Amino acid sequence: MEFIKVSSEVDKIAKEVVDSAFHVHKSLGPGLLESVYEACMLHELQKRGMKVESQKTISVIYDGLKIDAGLRLDLLVEDEVVVELKSVETILPVHDSQLLSYLKLANKRLGLLINFNVPVIKDGIRRRIL
Figure 1 (tube, rainbow, N blue to C red):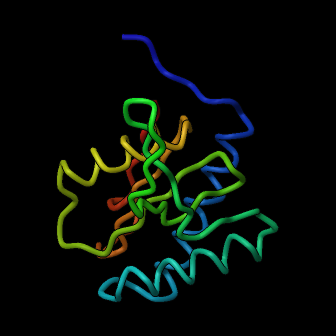
Figure 2 (cartoon, rainbow, N blue to C red):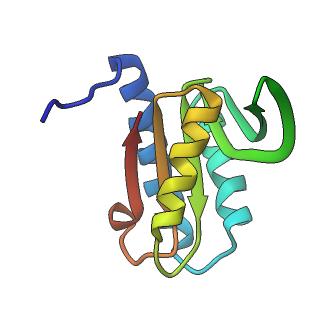
């Protein structure tokens, strides 16, 4: 099986996102609404000098038609890394599928699925590459 890589620049962005998640989780802990974690992640990443878009709208192209169906990325960091945030008891396969679909639709290679509703944040982070 061939190991899929991303550029060192994209990997560096992902490391900043993960480190930001560690800081937010250490400060707040689990059990809050996803919107709270999103606002804190936005602040933490911007504080680090990162360009971050929150609730970035993406379109679906179907049969040559551009459809604006209200799909939104939780965070898009440096126009490279898609971040999907959750605050749920368990990450389900549909959450992984959602991230992969968002990567495809946004034409991005790297995505992070981060669930803040865990005792230890490293157990709540999944990295996906297209």
